[in-house]
Amino acid sequence: MSNSPTGLRIETVHTLEKVDPAAWDTLAEPEGFYMSHGWLSSVEYESGVTLCYLLAYRGDRLVGGLPVYDVERENQVHYSRGPRLEQLGADPAGTWTIAGSHRGYSSGILRAADCEEEVLDALLAAERELGRPTPRTGSLYLFATSRTAAALHRRGAAVDFECGDATIHTGGRDVTAYCGSLRSRNRVELKREYARFRDAGYRLGRQRLSECLDEAAPLLANLQTKYGHSVTAEQSRTAFAWQAASLDDCSVVFTARDGGKLVALSVMYAWRGTLYARAVGFDYEALRDAFEYYGVCYYLPIDYMSSHGLNALHLGIGSYGAKTNRGARVAPLWTVALADDPADTPRPAPADVSRWRAEYGERATPRELWDVPWARGC
Image (cartoon, rainbow, N blue to C red; front, side, top):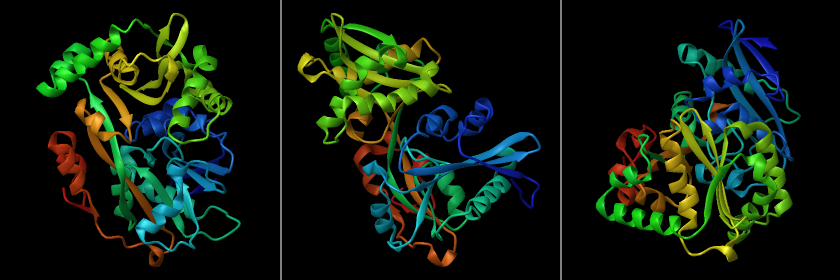
């Protein structure tokens, strides 16, 4: 425990188990679900990582939080530090810790709006002072939100473009009404897909993750295997069992069954007015060429959202053409390097995001999300 010059109390813990979920999630809301108490708790088990959480208190009130990860062995290619450091022009021999989040393709720093700057400074100072066996160069924030990237840029950090982050805003409409709000060409295509899926003869349903985990695990592994990842059904079950342990109450699994046999599913989490799509899985040999992916990942969720007070479907990274054709807006995510010594700060050229805006258009990449001082092409 330590005290900052502004009177904030900084504590270091190694699990969120005893941190009040409601207090944490109130701070996490501007950064999104992948900074939530439940999500971060679900990935604490991962091997190859030593983690801690820096907590900032004003009196008894939690006003800030920062997860910090010393990664000894990275098991996920999308979180490899080497390519990011090379792109930033950073010294490859440097030692960089991961901060913000280590899974979920989104990360940030939690801070209360009424004391944001002092909380940020206190947490960053506490992170620099953490005892480590070897000296380090600084912290990397992978898939950082624009909110956190801006705060760190003001403190001298290097910022480079990472990728896009897609979300559909439905306004609470069901599938039919939502499709009617799209451009005519997309509207016709989506209605055709939805009708084909709906008429394919599947028994459609919803479950909690814990209720179908054993059935779901092989199908979730199938998708990973299809795209070149070596994941077994047992490994898939282990990962999603941890999610079920922390997140089951907000889980929604959309299912398509052939008789009683599960053949398609999506795993999603409802959190703070948004439905977050986490994973999909299929029994590929049993599918009927009926747009099953879009059925369980778009159309069933949108109908569900319309009757459960949810207004946004978060679809995350990748497959941007398919997502924007179905009405998604894309926000940028960033790689941020904050060096302990300013002399070690990388100096990348300003990120050029013009291709994204040219390819997907103003509607999908609104200027207010992309116009930032460290990028060009907005």
